[in-house]
Length: 483
Image (cartoon, rainbow, N blue to C red; front, side, top):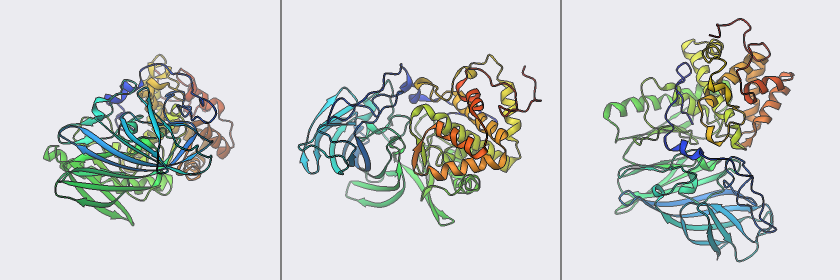
C-alpha cells in the first residue's frame, strides 16, 4: 500500500476508510478452544480474530454475483483446505450471512460467532493432513458491514472495488484471512452485461448471457487473502506483452477524458518499471502484470497481486507505480507472517522509489537519507514510533514509510553496495511465494554481511528516538545541520 508521496516528495496521502480499522487496543492472542476445535484466530496479536487455527487453505474458488442497483452480493466459495489437527469444528472469517455450508459434499452445521466468525461443524470429524472441500453459500450488502470500525467496501451505482488493507476479504468471501496462509485463487464475477471486471492473474474466459456476463480470473501463484480483489464497472482495457510476459491495464471511464489519458500513459510505463526493478531484485515473481485505475475515492493505492489498484494517477506519479510494483516482490511474493513487520514491506517499496530516481533522474539516495534525518528534528513525533512494532493503529503511519525507507538506505550504507543487493536478492529468492518475519530479514542481513547488526536495527526499528549520526547507524558522520 502507498499513502505517501514520491521519494523526494514523501508527503502523507489520506488513508480514508483504512485508518478507521486500526482504532483500539490489541487483544490477547487466541489459542485453540479445545481438542478438536480450531482457534478463532491464527495468532496475530494485532488482529486476534484474523485467520483461524487448525486449517490451512490451499485454494479458493470464489464465484460472486453483484448488483449495482441494490449493492447486493451473492456468492458461492469452494475452499480446499487441509486440517493441521483433527477437527470436529473449525472457523472461517466471513462478515456476510452464510446461507448454506457443506464439507466434502455433506451438509454441515454452521453458526455465527459474533460478527466476524463463521463456525462450521462437519458431519464427520476431519483428519489432520487429509484435504477437504468446504462449500459456503452467502449473501449480503458489503457496503453496510464494518469490522473494527472499518468500512472497506467502495461502491457507487456505476462502479465497485473490493480493495483494501488489512481487511477486505471477509466482506466478499469466506477466508482464512491472514497473510501467513497463502493460497491459489479462481475468481469469477457475474455483473450486468456491458460492465467489465478486472481481478488478479489471467482472464480465463468471459461468458456472455442475455443480461449478464461472467468474468473468470485465475491466479496460479499463492496469494494472501487481502491481495485478492475485483473491480467492476465501465473500464477501458488495454493488453499487451513485453519480453514474453503479458500485461493488462484498465482505467475507469468514469474519470474525465484527460484523467483517463494520463492514467493510461502511467500504467503503460509499468512494464518498463518491472524490467527496471528486475535488474535490482531478480526475476519478477508472477506470470502477468499491469494495473487498474478506479474512479472511486479510495484514498490510497494498493499492491494487489499482479495488478495494483490506484485511485487516479497523475502525470507526476510514476513514483507511485514504482512503489506498488516493488510490492510485487516485497509484500506479495514474500508476504508478512505477522502484521507487526509491515515496515519491511513499506520500507522496501519506499526505498525502491529512491532507487528508481537514482537510475532515471540521478538523485542520490544517500543524500536523501541525510536530508530526511536532518529535516526531522530530535523531538519530531516520527521518531517516537517503533516501526518494528508500530501497533495496529499505526500500521500505515508516515514513519513506517519514511523511516522504513531510511532504514533500507542506512543498511545499504552500513553493509556496502555488494552485500546490500546480495541480501535483497537472496531474501526474495529464498522466500519466494512464501512468508517471513522482520527478524529473519535482520538475521539474513547479519549473515550476508558478516557483521553484528543488532544495534543498527535496534536504533532504526525499536528505539523511539532519532538514530545517532554514526557510521554504525549507516549515517555519514559529517552531514547537514540538525536544526
